[in-house]
Length: 341
Image (cartoon, rainbow, N blue to C red):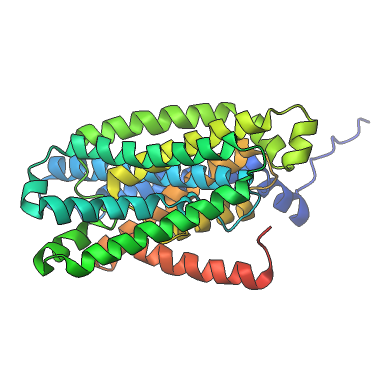
């Protein structure tokens, strides 16, 4: 008499938990959550002309996806190179330089004349100025034999303080009416993104992301530290220089497109929040998984937060204010628990 064929054992609680901790499962769940939020973002609260509403919200959602993924990817990579999980590219002073540029535009040109300037010209000038600043810093860093990454960060902090001090001085002597106009230009806004600028920014950020993705193996090695990376055959200076320039390009384009997401603080709390949630949710250390997870989490938080604030709570506040509050709490918790490496 043939024996009954053994049935597969039901997965135990530990086995199911281990399955859910696999990178592919985590990334699939995050992608599904992003899809749900995207559909809700496009449809919840739509009244009247659906064609106009879908076109407007689609452009806004694309801008959110581009900016969120750029900040998330650049923050994770910057923390890998810096070897510290509380640092973000904002410490280099990009946001402060952007705010100083906006202050100078309004102060010297006036809001009326500034409104007549081509937005594409302003986008190019802002991106070029921030990128040139970063290139000067990197060139200065890598021309010196004894200068390290810590010196670069310190110089970035000092320049950030200089930019903020100059900006505050100009804001104190500017016309009060011009100051009101200036305040609207200092915080991120996804409502007024020009379609042509969005197309250019999307192409640049996607192209840079592809290059960074191809460097994911070197990033895994750089995570071991400078000495180990050199011993394993990495051309440290050349690789780090290339990666920093690509990260700077992503941050500069995203900032010039919508403005600084967290005002002009020295730490981008949105990037800090997204990167550390990715470390927590995505198992393993491989950048192939962490970068994808961080980009999905960034889109999920930014689009979901914007949806809740605008459609469910009826607030007109930018979601960056909320992420700044939550990220600030996370920053303090990490400092108290000694999680920063």
